[in-house]
Image 1 (cartoon, rainbow, N blue to C red):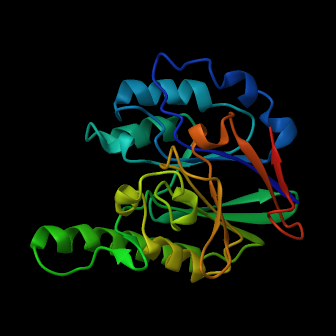
Image 2: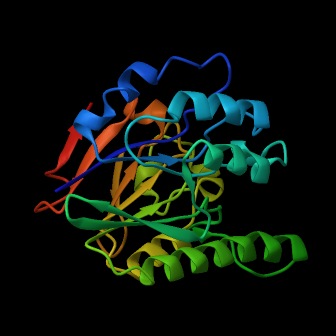
Length: 247
């Protein structure tokens, strides 16, 4: 069994320091790794990244993250990533990491993701160059995610994104903004490999649970949704649903 703690949209800055730390100090007893689904900071500054590194660094288990849209706000995303890596975190964007846990190999493929919408109500790569660029960005990101997932040979496979791969976990958000919260292309990428679990954030008013068209369990772990420092998911059990616990 592998236990994964997960959260997203922690939006750390100097005012948040200390808020998550008491629960994070319990991590080694309840989880084998911590995955964070983007929006690590409020405005994507280096100073906020340093606060994130202080709050979520050195927690006794591996920490794997993707960036979110907030982490790009100040156009310092590369520097933000460097600060987090210097603190020992693994930052993914179209690439993978493999963790050896309890004799099992956990593979994680991560991207920020992007928008575009879902079947029946999605943007198309037609018309103005701006629209082609918008949809093309999502296509390229989804292709990288799918290739990363398919390239892993592991015992358990997890997809980590910020944007949602399914509409079910957006329920509670205004329908008008679904195209800016995720894309069906991410779901297709996840379904292209034997993915055990998909984690995302971004939708603060969304719902926790969904599934891809191929049946992969999807969890929205945005902090405003799970309302705690992290949820813990158990893999290599009969089902992810049966293995869900809360901390």
